[in-house]
Length: 190
Image 1 (cartoon, rainbow, N blue to C red):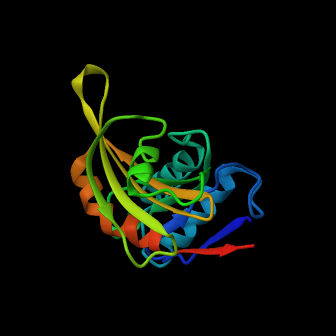
Image 2 (cartoon, rainbow, N blue to C red):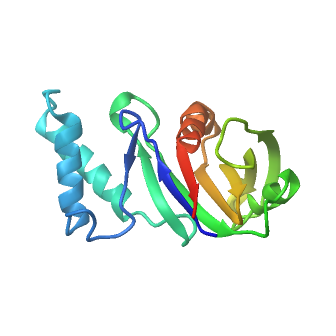
Image 3 (tube, rainbow, N blue to C red):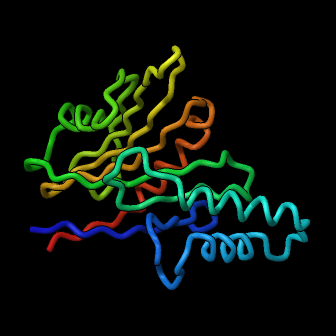
C-alpha cells in the first residue's frame, strides 16, 4: 500500500515555497520571488523599497535550508497579513503499522530530541492517530527554541508538519494556522 497526500490550502494564509528549482515553470528562486512579491503586493500601492524588501524576503525563504534534510513540502505564513513571518516544513516517514500516541510522541522528537512540553490529541483529521507535540530545545549559550510538530500516522506512513522558532509567542500565535494547514491534508491509500 502507498499513501498519497494532497493539501486543501487556504492561499490567503499560506504560500507554498519550492524546496528546489526549477519548479513549476520557474527556473530560479529569484524569478519565483519576483513573481510572488508582485502578486501579493498588487493593488496595494507599496513603495518600491517595500516591494524590493518583500522580494528579497521571498528569495531568502526559497533559498533557506530546511531544519531537517528530508522535507517534502514547505509553506510560508503570508507576511502581508500581519502575522509572524515563518516557514513550516512537512516530512514523511515510514512507520510500522499505525503507531499509538506514545510512539508518535517519540517520533515527533526525531532530529532534535528536546523536552516534550505538551502533547494534544487531534480529532477530525484523516489520520488514525494525530497529535500536536510541543518540544523545548536547549540551544548553545543557554537560549531555547520551541518546536511545534503536528504529526499523524496512517497505513504505515507518518506525516509531520513542523514549526521551529526561538520566539514562543510566535509559535503560540501561529498554532491555530499550522493546525488548520495540517487538517487540510487529504489522504488516499492506493
